[in-house]
Length: 88
Image 1 (cartoon, rainbow, N blue to C red):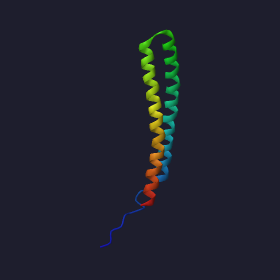
Image 2 (cartoon, rainbow, N blue to C red; image 1 turned 120 degrees about the vertical axis):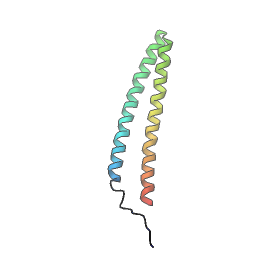
Image 3 (cartoon, helix red, strand yellow; image 1 turned 135 degrees about the vertical axis):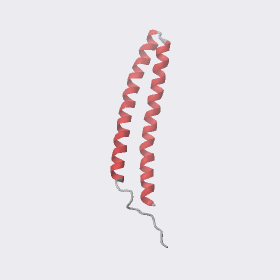
Image 4 (cartoon, helix red, strand yellow; image 1 turned 180 degrees about the vertical axis):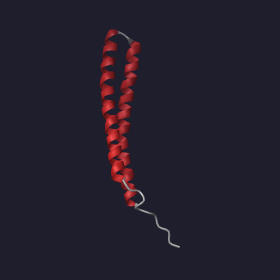
């Protein structure tokens, strides 16, 4: 009995790559906009002595940077997984 994997069973890898790329681009754009807005709010709140608002804006900056880093890593990880699947 010969058992072989069905390499044609996963059609649409190109479509998956396009969809993931578009979604991660959208996430990166939103993260950069969030970073800009949070940095502006942090600067204004710190200048006016509103330490509670400055702390929340600082958290927003850190979340935006983390989100951008994870989205950037997600692109590389997804490309690696697709390349790994092509080698099987």
